[in-house]
Length: 522
Image (cartoon, one colour):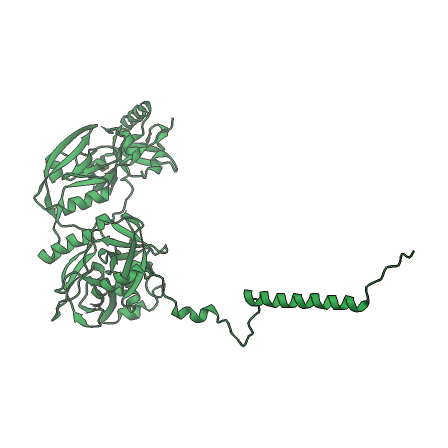
């Protein structure tokens, strides 16, 4: 019996392997053809970079700047204004120097270098901007752009030039209207409503910066409203209610429009802050329009006159009156024989409403009074000793004059010794001497501030040596003892002490009064 098995031969093994490999290749090629897995050769197709087709791509919808349409509407009405001012050798500084001081706080060249050479010229040039407000050729600009000009040349956006004449000027608001005569109607810029503007909204400044870059446009926002009491180099207007913007403006932009996104002028670009960056100021167009209407109609501005010196009703002052609101203004002084005095308005009264309009601050109040027609009879709502009352006042006419700062000489020396009141006030006072009584009007009495402690209540409130304290706590201060009694009463009430202070020119007796609140120590 045999157990032997017959093994596979080498030829049969290699034949099986060949069949298996062949079947795999056939199946792989079939799948590759079906799934298109074979790579294309370089010669068959080259992929183009995406940027080569960028020019054929459709632009995104709605991406055009909204400023474009505004500029197309507004720019044709904006003009360049060149002036010449006649000066004599050795005369006053030129308009160019004054304008540089206004905008930059210094004359050209920084230290005035070359100024003497310019002053030897017969005429000195100056430049600014403006904008047409009607098709007949009336142009709104700043008064300081055309002040003292002997010749005015206006260049339109289409490069046509015209000689202009002054219709009227108002230094108190820095507004002027000039006129050119053209044979065809001119493009006028519509005027908007500056009372409706909001902080944060977009605005454009259009003008002639640096005197040569005609038609320049800059964009920004309204950064604040109601700016006043600005110390503008070259002369600040008496009435200030500026719009503040960060739209870039420069020397030469004066008189150009500040425009909203509807293509309306909402202000006249007037000044910048020489110490800051990106801060400019424009006259609200509502104020400018009212002034322009009077200049066109009468050649001058007629303002109403009430006869009071108003002061801000600060929260501290409101507390001395026992008030929870600081809306209104405090009457610091009443002019003799004025509409206010004839109506019975007194110092210390709080004016809360004028001609049915709520009074919010001194700036708005002064503008409201000035804009009220002369001889108009208006109602004035007051608070006196916490009680409301209303008086009727007929406004008078007055010529507005710029206030002249006067020195504050020391009081006339006398033989009255200092009498110190409670240390809570941080000042010493004494009675008036005979010489001082003679300088002041017969009905004026008070105590003279002889010393002010730095950092004390009086010094913090702005009281200075030589001031006259007329009232304290609503009562006349005829002696240091009377002031001391007022201090005790205020401490007992827990409120600040309300003091009526007069800054006196002891050489003439002229004085201006105000109210301040003194915070007393516990």
